[in-house]
Image 1 (cartoon, rainbow, N blue to C red):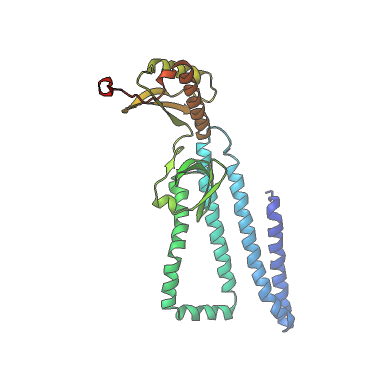
Image 2: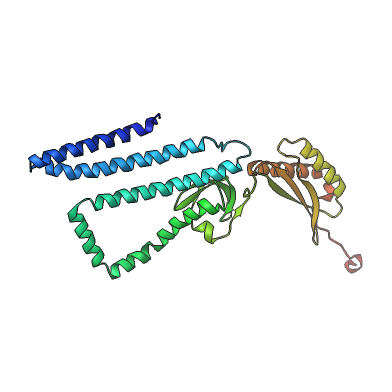
Length: 306
């Protein structure tokens, strides 16, 4: 079986340290001086080597597993789902490995074990206080694991949080990074997404419907607006030819509100399509129906002016 190049260095280092451990053990039997001090250091280095090997191994396993899933393809819903789960599970595994390695180092020496036992025995109230203090951190960690399996969102999902629109760029055990539309980054704790409502525009599919609202005078021709919408969409590569609707959704005191619904293959394209349709519809009204733009009517009573 071929060993990955990234794994050779940590694996070789660990093997050399193990061989040195046996050598130091033999020498410490004959010499009671310098070699006895080297042996504990060597034990720590072996544990560090094993932890290093395992961390590199989880990274290699993740990359090999994800080779079958292309997140850059257009229909990448399944790939994003797998990427989200695998990335978070790798972080959980790395956390457990590091915690396990630290525990092994602490219990490797008799003196440290005794100190630890003494601390735990006399912890009492201090332990309770520390437990309450760590409650939020533990809750955040568990929230990250919940997100990996429940998946209210995935990598590259289009979301609206805190009134900002963007994409899920990074999911960690304790925080999530949202790349906003203007390239800013919004960093939120994982518990935020389990405790507060947010919008996920690509939860079940990358396809999305965009809306455009046009306000006009009552004299506008809705049939002509629909014909113009047809012409605009047919000439645009942004439209995916699935949804095309113009409806009058509100009749106010002075204006009429028309809502246009159009569909696109993903949220960035839907945004561009909405902007394009809005611009072209306004140009159409300005050119062909200037009298149908919103206006304020004033009625003068001639009898009262005499």
